[in-house]
Length: 427
Image (cartoon, one colour):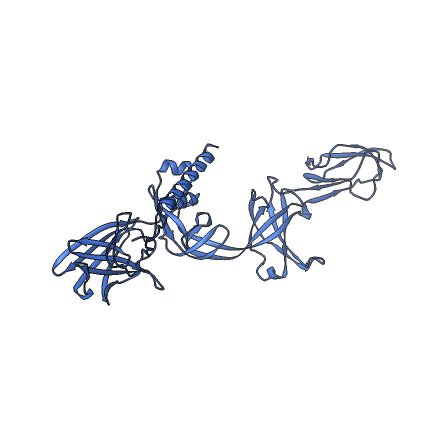
């Protein structure tokens, strides 16, 4: 209860902060809309934004030293993100051929990206893609007319800091990203049935009258236990009807004083092993075969176990035209009941993924599917390129380094805290 209350208060505080940020940062009449990646042009001079970051004519971050300045933009309209840098002297554009410039990006995890540039028209074009996330500490060095210039600044997005104690109380959990086998599954309806070899129909040896009943429906019995006594019609002697196997009485069809006949008076089932029968339809038949692994799950999801298909019926049911596939299941604990409906998830293909993450860690951030990487008490977004998936795992094709610690539980709290802080795609 304390943990749930803490999470509730945490979310309320985040929501309030987001609302306050949206109110204070809303557009005002006469204001300019800026594309922080440098896709806006038309300003006649430099601007000082409310956050204290000077902006150049192309909407990029302006770095000044005396009468010399460079404007750093990231351009990504129709192309992978790349640096475009404009230079000015006394507020006038500088010929890009006259400038040598380098950019160094330091990211969390000790990753360093370095960019050199080529002149292109009125700007310098960076060699290489500026990969997501655009969150880094930046160092820009320039050589213009024999003088060296250097600037450093931080440009963080999709990042937040949460102390370990608060993260633990909030139920935030992490795991390390690595290789995983992706099991592609086919989800089928199924029901629990008795194994006929573990089913016994108990009949009296001689016709007679039932004198007593010693066991009832649902009772567990051992082989040799007395179930009832019968007085023989021929000898008038009373004899015992005993359980031939150990198991549970699943049917009792007799009362004291009744005459016995050919029908069973008890049915005993050994439920330590049962059959789960999967319903296959024509669209499923080509994918399912003997020897495939199956995960059996109760409808409420509380019970899960695994088995292997050992038989597929050669016949189809007349009414439904379904075909039965059989999965023997160890049921020593008695979790499965005869007639119970369950789900069967057949593993129809296996894909070794060099890198995969848990589905539970995924969140939507901007236009990306992401996870949040953890570095101590700092959490930062990682935009993912994704591949094959199943119920629990999804293959990662790009955007994450193997061995990265990432959030697998309550990742929505990280997302909410980042959105609360108003972290933008800004440079």
